Image (spheres, rainbow, N blue to C red):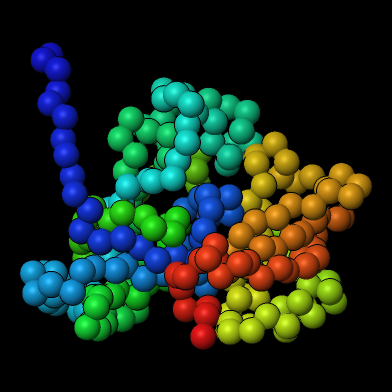
Length: 253
C-alpha cells in the first residue's frame, strides 16, 4: 500500500471549559453533567449561517483535537484505567488520548445558542474537554441513527463506582469566602469530579498515605483532597490568580 498523504485541518472554534488541566477531566463525556463549557466561534456570517437549525437538536457530536497532551512516544498498546492500568489493549480498542491522530469525539447536550457582537456561543455541559480545546467539526446527534440498541462492549460494560465525597469545615469555609462564583454550582462540580476518582488507576481503591493530599485546578480554584476509609474528603480550596484562573464555564458570576 502506498504511503498515505498527510491531512491538514483548521479548527472552526475552540472550547472554554472549567477544566484547566488534564488531571481531573472525566475519562468519558457525560460522567460529570455539572461541568459547563462553551464552544466559541468567530462572529462571522458564515459561522452563524452554518449553525442554522442546530438549536433543534438536544445533543451534538463534537469532533476535537486532543491538545495539551505530552506523550514521549506513540504506543500501539495502552493500559486503560478501567482495567486498573495493569492490562495492555490496542490503542484502537480504547479511547486513550495517546493516538496516531489526536482526535476526540464526544456527544454532549446542547443548552443554548447565543450570538454576541464578538462571539457565537454554543453552551453545552457534561463534556470532557480541556480549556482551549480546538474544535474540528460539530454534527447533530440523531437518535434513530446514532443510538445503537444492540451495541456491546467486551470489557467496558459499565461506569466505574463513584467515590463518596465529603467536605471538611475548612473547605466549606474557603468556598464561602471565594468571591465572584456560583458557590452551589462550584461545590456540585467539584463533588462530581472527585467522585469519579481522577487518581491514576494504580492508586484507585486505596486510601491516601499519612499526610498525602491530591490537588487539581478546576473552575478557577486549586482544590485539595485526601481519601480516608474509602471516602474522599475535600480539605481546602485556594482561589487561583486571575491570570491563571480558568475563564470557562458558567460557575463564575
